[in-house]
Length: 113
Length: 112
Figure 1 (tube, rainbow over the protein chains, first blue to last red):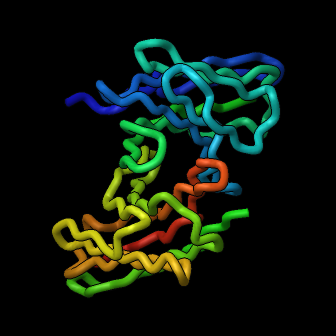
Figure 2: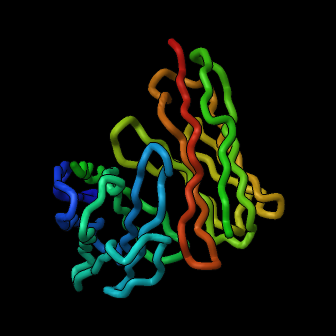
Figure 3: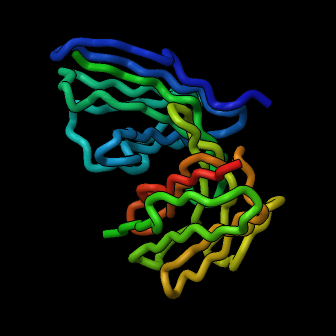
């Protein structure tokens, strides 16, 4: 069974631009979560989607948004990029919201110049 | 507010040694606890998932325990190998906001 895929793998943007990252979950998984990983803050939860609805959200500004499509694929968008948004963005999929193992993709490395 | 702490932050051991990694959390209201490993620049690989009603899980040379009442979990690695070198992260799924909270990780180096 194919794993979680994320595209693109690497991105370089400049301050003020916006970016869209994509995540395709494991087939049959309906929950997709997004995380930001930085050396200083570690892994921080961004948001989780289940059946096209955002179920919970971390403590990030409104510039960070996401959505999930009917095929469970998810996108996250960051508008008005700041230098501090440079990070590894990881998505994870699972069968359900509460009890299932989370399987992670390889991540998208975003660099903001 | 749920907080997850991992001790030690880094660990270096000779090959073949048995070792224990620790994870503590402040709020026992969790759905589950999961252990991951992360290789440099890569995504996370799931190792073990323990549901809140369970006490331990085993997979190969790995054994994870959960004591929800005291807010602790341990990951036991038997007969460590150089290929075990990685950062090990624990994460709890919180019932308060259904969020997953990660610890900062333990960086493990196994010397050949």
